[in-house]
Length: 285
Image (cartoon, rainbow, N blue to C red):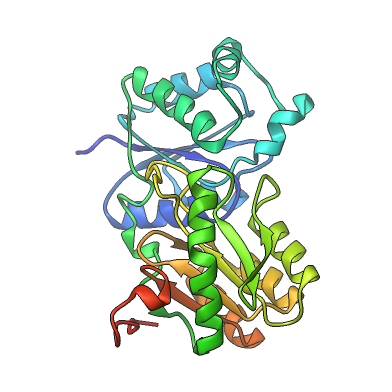
C-alpha cells in the first residue's frame, strides 16, 4: 500500500477538492492545515488532520514524518501580506532561518525556499495537479455564455501583458477594456485587482489569468472559482479568459452557475485567440 499523501493546506476550497480527487485515486491523506486559513470542512475529507500555526516548520516536518508520509503536496493560498504582520506568525527556529534566507519576498522565492526545505527532509514534493488533472480548465467555453469577438480581442491584448507580469513574479491577472490595461494584479490578489480594474472602467471589462512562463507546478498554480465570478459580477466585467490546462477551476458547477447568472463568458485558451488555428476554439463545457 502507498504511503499517505501529506497535504499542506492553506486558504480556499482547493485543498478540499484535491483531497477528494486524491481519495478517488486511492490515496490515504494526512493533512496539515494552517490555523486561521484552512477550510474547516477539510478534516472530514482526510484520514488524519493536524492544525498548525503559520511558521511552525519543525512541527510540520515532525507531523508528516509521524504520519508515515513520503509524498507531499501544497494546496491553498497563504497570503504574502501575513509576512508583514508578525502577530499572525509563530516562527520557530527553522522558519526564522528560512525567512532570513529569502533573497526577496516574491512568491517563487518564498515557496521555493520552503519546497527546498521539505525535500531536504527527505519528502517528495509533488506537482499540485499530479492527482487531480481533471480540475483544470479545458480549451473552449465554460458554461453557457459565448465570448464575443470584441471580448476575445481584449483577451488577446491582455494575454502577453499577463505573461509579462508572471515573468516578473508579481501577479498572473490583468483587467483590460478596449485594449487598454485597467489593473495589474500584485500582492492584493486576483479579486481585489478585478474590483480595482472594474472601478476604473465601464461595464464590460475583461479579466485574463494565465500561468507564469516558468510556472513551478508544485505550487501557486493559477486558480479561479465562484468568488472570482462574484467579484466580476459586482464590477460589471464581461469575460474571464484563463489558460487552458494550467488553471484550476474551483467548484466548477458553482463557478458556471455564477457566470451564467451574471451573463459572464468564461473561456479556456491555450494562447492569445488570434494565435490559434481557425476552428480550434472548440472544447467541452
